[in-house]
Image 1 (cartoon, rainbow, N blue to C red):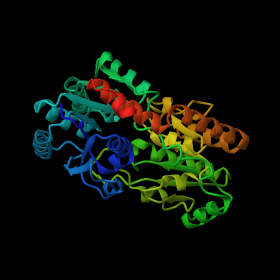
Image 2 (cartoon, rainbow, N blue to C red):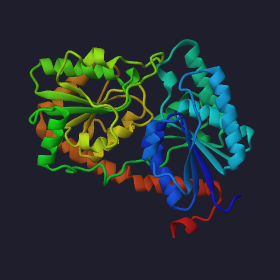
Image 3 (tube, rainbow, N blue to C red):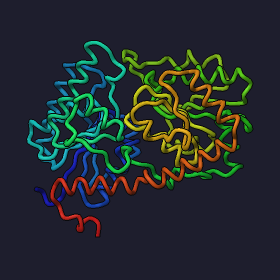
Length: 395
């Protein structure tokens, strides 16, 4: 093995790398390891502090199935893996995972890891579902070890016979990279700064704000969220909806949503796009909502929790681990507009209950999802797999 541990983290898109892989990559770099990030290019990649010990190589990875592009990507990955001679290749996201696992297997990378963060095939039907399920099965076969970012997702993958139980585990209590509990904390903005931020966004000072963070995509439940919000608004509640995240630009994809068609008739809905500092937007929010169809865990839920904000989410794998129903938030049935309305009313009608849930959410997040803990545990996992002396890195 090389004197300096060489690790490659592969994902499909830069947005994902910047928001989820960046923390552990920088942590590993700071501990003396050499880390290379590989994904499709996106301007977000420049948010990462690249340099000695942490580099980026552009590998175009199509999100949708495209045999010609996928073969080209596979050969590029094979070439890159041969060049670097990595000790570990660790992938996330479906397409990035499949292609990098094949390339790592073919080039003899000794440690091949993959973390599942949700299964697209859950919401698919027909041949596309079969193909994507088979892709996950192949990932499980080619990897030396696999992870899920929540206990419920791990159990689901085992039940579906995607991977054997002895080959998959969850790091700590779940989540992909934990939460920076210093960055995401209550009162990061004082009252005056909140008013300024609200004015800049176009929010009323007194309105209760429901926020959403994530890719604007059908599978995130965005259509149900907007519908439930509008109907709750019609009941006379003084509320506004804040949507944060990039538009899914893949108009041929199964989850594409023409957002403007759903919000153009409602001045109480504010779309602000992708934001580098979502914590500033959560700071002016009163509750968070993620009515997703599928999740691996629900990182944005625990980011909101760290800010002392309770969440409304769906009863699906992942979110049942991120939200404790009735304690840190409310869980509703999948695709249930009525359920969302009921949850909104329950929290809006009981401000003390809303505040209590927020405090409990913050406490649970600090105890279970502190990023520093998650980063150290994943690094120890790497060292254990490589049979390396941990004292060298944790002294």
